[in-house]
Length: 203
Image (cartoon, rainbow, N blue to C red; front, side, top):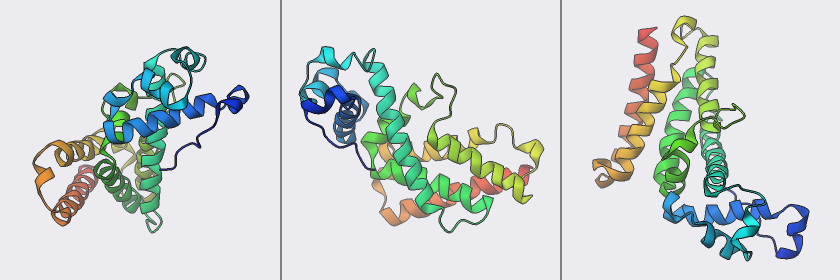
C-alpha cells in the first residue's frame, strides 16, 4: 500500500499537514498496530507540536479513523489485484475473501488498526468501508449472474465477512500461526470456497 509523501513544515500551510499526520500514523501502525498510534509520537515524527494536529483531527480517535480508512483502501487494492481474472460473481467473491486474508497475514499491524476495532464500521457520512463495498459488489454480481437468489442477498455480506475475519484472526493469533504458508493458503481457499458453496446452496 502506498503511503502519502512526507512533506516539510514549509508546505503545511498549503494543507499537507493532514496527509503528513496520516502518513506518520501509517508508519507507526504498520509494525505496532493500533496501540502504536500515539498522538505525541505521530506529531514528533512529523516535526510539529501536538496542538498542531488538532487543526485537522479533533482527537486521537479521529486520527485513528483516518488511518484506518487509508489502510482499508490498501486492503481493497489487494482484493482488486486478485480480481483481474475474476469474470464472474463467484470469482469476484473468492478474490475478495482471499484478498482480505492475504492482507491480514502480510500486514498484521495495519490489519489491527483497520479491522481490530469499531473503525471498520461505516463512517459518519454513511459510506461503507472500502473492503465492505468490494464485498457488496461481489455479492450483487452473484445475483446478476443468476447464481444467488435476490431474496437471499440481503445480509449475505455478514457471514462472508465473519468467515474470513475469523480465519484471519486464527492466522495471526491462533493455531494457524504455526502451519506452513502452503497449508495456510490451502486452508484459506477451502474456507472461502466453503462459504461460497454454502451461500449458493442456501439460496
